[in-house]
Image 1 (cartoon, rainbow, N blue to C red):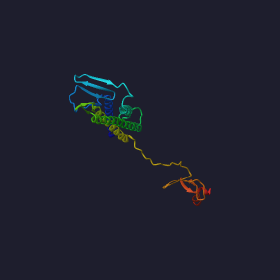
Image 2: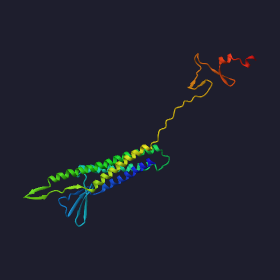
Image 3: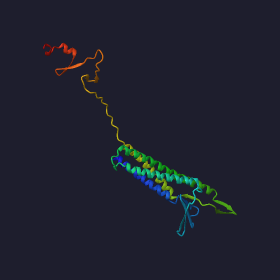
Length: 261
């Protein structure tokens, strides 16, 4: 029961984390306009992995997709690739883990096969979570770098006046969703790997027993089996007389009633 519970908990955590990764990838608020110096503005800008949006004070929001691929920064393309790879691995491992659940019986599938499938799905969930966390962290590092670079050149002195030359961006809600989702996927994969150990059948050690066909040339002793091959000067064959086992010398020394016929 504990193994089944552990496996189900890992499956649910991974499922929730995968859903969060998909939601974070499709969200538009990966980076939002920093309003620290200008809290009141008529236009609010935010960007995602696939498009940039502008929201006006009237409530109208306009989004424009990125129509280019080569013109995008290399880090943004790397983040896209990491998130897509993480989602694909998560979906595949989710399908594998469904068939590996111990509470579901499919034909005559053995527990050892389910244990291997659970381990495989757990490892894939771990890789999926790492991809999501890495992708979000790379995007966050890009935001931090651009923030301080824009902060250094934000104000310029023109005729004794200060004017803003560049819009700064800070962390969006999608980053926090991606971090949490990647962590849940990673933890779920670890839990499933732990559940795999309890699903593996225990190996039973059987003592080896040697079997020899019984016959007139086999001598039974308390210490074990010893077969007489009939060769050698010390080997004495046995014959059965009157329901007992005696050697030829014992038979010759003891007269029998059949000797006087």
